[in-house]
Image (cartoon, rainbow, N blue to C red; front, side, top):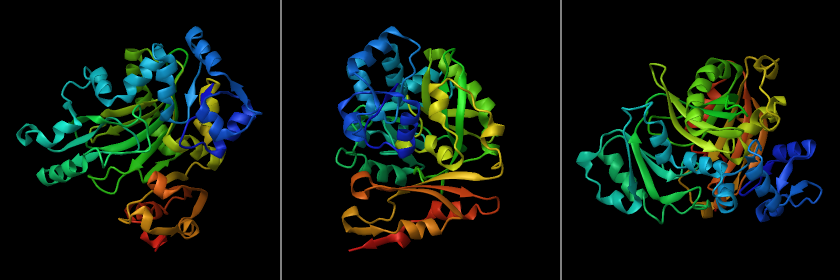
Amino acid sequence: MILIDYPYVSEFLLNTIKKNNYEIVSTKSARELLKDESLAWISEEKAVKRVKEQADTALYSNSENALGWLAQHLGDSTLSKQAQLFKDKARFRELIKESYPDFQFKTVLLEEIQYLDEGELTFPFVIKPSVGFFSIGVHVVKNQADWHHAKKELNYENLKSIYPPEVLNTSSFIIEEYIQGEEYAIDCYFDKDGEVVILNILHHKFSSGSDTSDRVYSTSKEIVLKFKSNFAEKLHSIGLKSGLRNFPAHVEVRVDSKGRIIPIEINPLRFGGWCTTADLLGVAIGYNPYEYFLRNLKPDWEQVFEGKEEQLFSIIVLNNNSGLAPAKIDDFDYELLSADFENTLLIRKMDVGKYSIFGFLFVETSPGNEAELSKILLADLKKYITTS
């Protein structure tokens, strides 16, 4: 069963739904987005009843906006309580603090930020909304200058977003120590027995230590095989604490220089936002994580990457870091951008005025050609922008 909500449904996910005749909860948002009466719609009442009566119901959502529907219709259910636990970064830290007793964090209200005693802050640290998405309101603070800049940015006016309160609650923030190391994004699910099934692992590349953007995510056979067992073991312990079953998730972790795995957050009931991480290998090589979760299957990675063992597959997030206001931008040259990559698999265009991003690119990169990814990681995208 699938919950569809704004802001976006990909063609790949929609085709997956049609091919498998997956049931879709008949919400107002889903009807508006899909506009297709031939789909396997299930009424909200029947969906609620099924989740309440059948504990093994597999529910997937394309968007965390659907957490609002879940809270409204199934607020007392175990599933909704689990989703709310993981979406709240402060509660998540409380859940795992026994495993990380030395990890420092605290919560503050938005109105308290301007008056915090700098003497009580330990640099470097990260400050971010307790409930947040898409790196909105996230700041890496390495020194006093960074802190003064962050305080200027962290106010109600600057933190308005397209997401509802269940996704981006800008009144409560978490301050936590900065985790050194390489960052990875994991699509996975906890199966009917609570075991962790890894569906993809992507290396989240940054341009610098203070970068918090979502510009480049890359996956390959080598990346998946290197980390899947250790990541699954770490996530299994978290799943045991919270009783997760038939539960999809998009997880972010860092791996430090000593190989320690430190979770950053677990995003409930979905894979990567905007139908990105789950679509990537589907578009590239025909591997479909949605089907693996909804059928309770485990991937054979030798088979998944057969013939593409050495290739790197990446999502390029075209966030507007040009310094140009959307109102000043007349056009974005997607074809010119595409030509800067060895093999562009997909161009997904977005309205930068509405979503603050120009869209997404899926690309395939051969060994020795990784410079194209480093280049776009540092790009301000002005090369592709026409202004008025």
